[in-house]
Amino acid sequence: MSRKPAATRRPRRAATSATARVPSVTVRHYCQGIGDCHLLTFTKADGAPFRMLIDCGIHVSITGGPALVADIVGDLKKETGGKIDVLVVTHEHWDHVSGFLTSKDLFKDFSVGDVWMAWTENPADPGAIELDKFKGQALDALQGASQKLDGMQGLNPYMQRVRDGLQAVLGFQFGAAGERVRSARNAAANLSAKPTPAYFEPGGAPQAIDGLPNLRIYVLGPPRDKAALRLEEKSSEMFPLASGGPFARALASGLR
Image 1 (cartoon, rainbow, N blue to C red):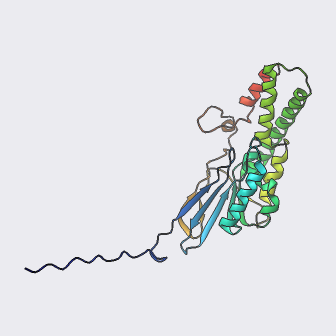
Image 2 (spheres, rainbow, N blue to C red):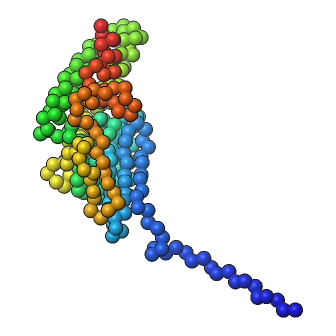
Image 3 (cartoon, rainbow, N blue to C red):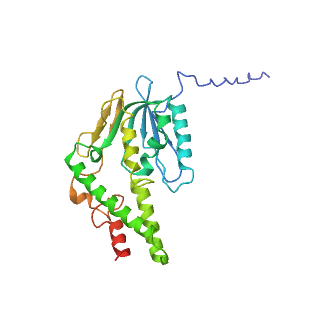
């Protein structure tokens, strides 16, 4: 009685660089607390990386925030070699842009191709100028009220909460000292290899990137319509700087 020869098991070949799949996009999200920083790396048709950095900041309430952001910028340098193809600055809030100021000495070693911002950040845009004037008036009013409350003695618990709320609004909307957010935004703009950032608004054709034929980038906001800028209650679409917004209502109630 003859035996069948034992089946031979072929060794499984290890994936080589030629056969391994390269991800078309990777997202690195930095969890530093209240703040935003995202690194998107796309693989172009020729295999070269295309890197997009979205914001870099942290809220003033986070203990040791500047040091945390410095660690993030160090990791960004390691991940990218200091080369960012597009830097996207979504909007002028301290927790989105503070890193460009507090880690300015680290960012100066980066090579940044383009800086993208919203039309609201364009100093030559009439609508942005009008909105900027409103923000300046709001800042003056908030700082004035905050300084008066800081100088008062024996505040009752309610007014203490109003004072703390004002300080939180100033930190979140305008930066640690009330005005540093503009310096941080400008520091980000100055990283561009081009003379000025590119400014975008919704309604135009989607943006395409050379070498990434399957990528389309849509601009969703902020809107141009003044009525839309006053939206307060619509889910996921809040523009609280509008006249009569929640901050203004809280202030009016607390200081009557």
